[in-house]
Image (cartoon, rainbow, N blue to C red; front, side, top):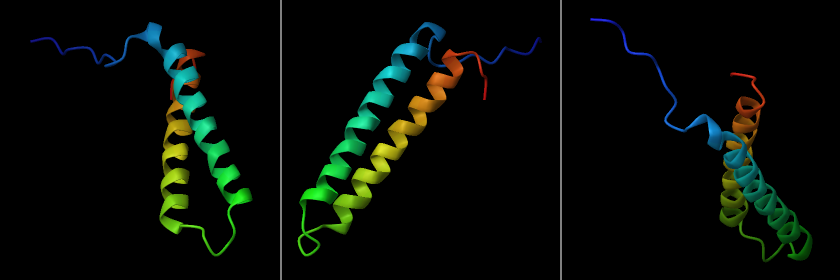
Amino acid sequence: MAPKAITSPVPDSLYPTLSVLTLAIGLVLTASFFIYEATTSRKTRSLAQELTTGAVASVFLGFGSLFLLIACGVYV
């Protein structure tokens, strides 16, 4: 029995679209994080909201960077 080739669960043609989409979402979340930090006083800030927004933005920026690298032909 011949081994089966490993294939991506995402079609190659969607990498540029996924890259733009996830990077845009990550940048919007990063901007909202900075706006929250700049406009909220220290006494009314929520650590949970800061950590959640930062973590979600980080995940989207990470996947966006990954898809961008793959779309450009840098296989990581």
